[in-house]
Length: 302
Ligand code: PSU
Ligand code: MN
Image 1: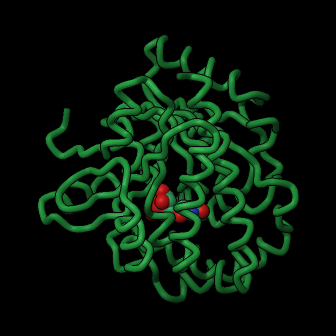
Image 2: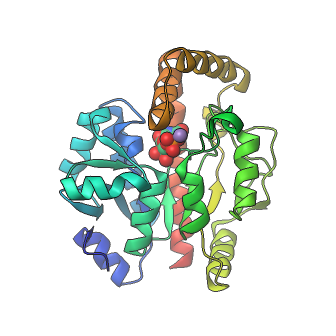
């Protein structure tokens, strides 16, 4: 076991007993939503996981440790400090550990820590992907490489159309990452249920997904999988309206010369600002919906 890994007593006990555990990321807390909605949502997500019979393990880097399972105070700190907390992807981990600094883990970093802890199911909102213009800029999220190499299944609502969704799916195909639609043949676009793009496979029950994951990993096929769970109908937003807003956000990002790891948080906050908070409701609901499904799959595998 990594000397840096620290499981909370509850998470450690659940894993030792073979109980269902669901990993949760922390970039969504500090960079993805405003305070106090971020903390309220993080706590609600944990509640939803518990209600479905699994143990939540919110993941972050704290005091020189890779933590799986956070206290209320720790979640509060991540939420209150917001974007002052370092956004931690794979390459940031050693610096934050060595300096004992606080790190909010992205999908990539959360997968790494979850895998080290022995947690195979992870719920979030949206994953990173190939950015629009990515063929020239090479801006491709480290989340995609992580999905190719680390054996954790990520339940998400697809990806936001701040990204080039067709290129993101091509990249995942190249790297052998299965993309499963939950009760849908379409890859969902985060705020909207539809993107016009197909998934590889549509599965209809948590048990079916559990069986495919078990089969993949017992067949020695290392790497993650995406379980794309569309936002509930009631909270789905109009794709045309959102696309207009995203175009606007992209123009401002170019104007402000935003680069590297700042791109995604910049675009996310612009979208939030331009939809005047309307998107926040959908965002919260889709995360809760993903947490429930991840817990159901984890329970089916336990
Ligand atoms: N997309 C969202 N919400 C998010 C993120 C992406 O709709 O909160 C966050 C996740 O933590 C994801 C990260 O792992 O951004 C990707 O950042 P980048 O594109 O810099 O790899
Ligand atoms: Mn990037």
